[in-house]
Structures are given as structure tokens and as C-alpha cells.
Length: 185
Image 1: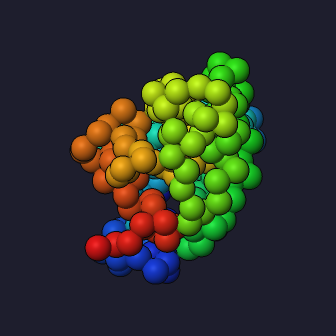
Image 2: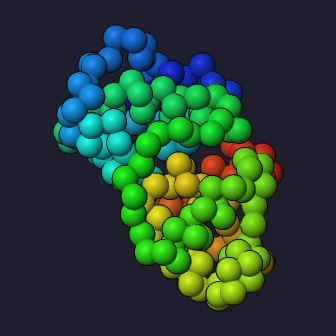
């Protein structure tokens, strides 16, 4: 079951039909699951265990066989981000990553909406290399929550989730335009 977020945002109304989050299925706090939300920015697949997010994937193509709707406590935050790009997610996340990856993700999490940093800039701050920072971005299990889309190359967007020129990079571009860090043109 796909979850479509309310289209009362400033986005293309053709992105999907609206729903009332209050009438969506309620998922008990101890339930595990995964679901997919169709947002004006693209599809977002989320996995959770209890009230802890265990993974997020930005999906270039919408799946029709998502096993469960996204519960209110996740969908509400996605909807708020779609309405207000400066919204900061407060969802609990399962710890993940190596110590180096966690340091990179901590720096990424501090980048405000509407701003970007380069792989090289983050690498210099960590005493590392840009490719290592790119690898940590690619390994990020929580895109959007840890906004790796705000990390760009010195010249151009760089990659996104291992994609250098396809649909995921287009998703990165939409996120940066939404946040005002990139012009729509």
C-alpha cells in the first residue's frame, strides 16, 4: 500500500492525490514494517522497528507492492518537510555505520536547508579525502534524515547514492531545488 502525502504544498498538484493522515492505518508502537510514501519530491521508502527508523531509501520508481503504509509518526514528518524545507526531522534512528561514517554524517546533519558543502570541504575538516566522504554519503542509510543531498562536488552536483547521472541524481536535484540551494532552471 502506498501512502500519498497531502498535496497542499507548493508543488505540482499532479504529483499524486491527497489523503487525510488522520484516517490512515495506525501502526502499533511495537510493530515492525516498511512502507512507501509518494511525496511531491518522489517516492520515499522507510523501514522501522517499533518507533525507530531502521532505513530510508529514495525510490526513483514507485512500487505497487509495498507491504505496509507508513505510520503517522513518519508520514507527518515527511509531509512537514515537503511543506517546509527547513523542517528538521526528529525521528529516532537505529545506530549505523563505522566511526568515520558517523563523523561524516554528523557534519552532514549540521548543514542547514538551503546550503551545501563540498565533499572536499568535509574531507578537509576530517583530515580525509573527498572520495572517502563520498563513500560515507553513499553508505548513509537515512537520506533526508541525514541530508547527504546537501553534499556536492566542487564543480557540479557530484553523485547521489552511487548514481552519477540518473534518476537518483535527479532526486538530489529536486531536493536541492525544494530547499532553495539550487535554482529550478
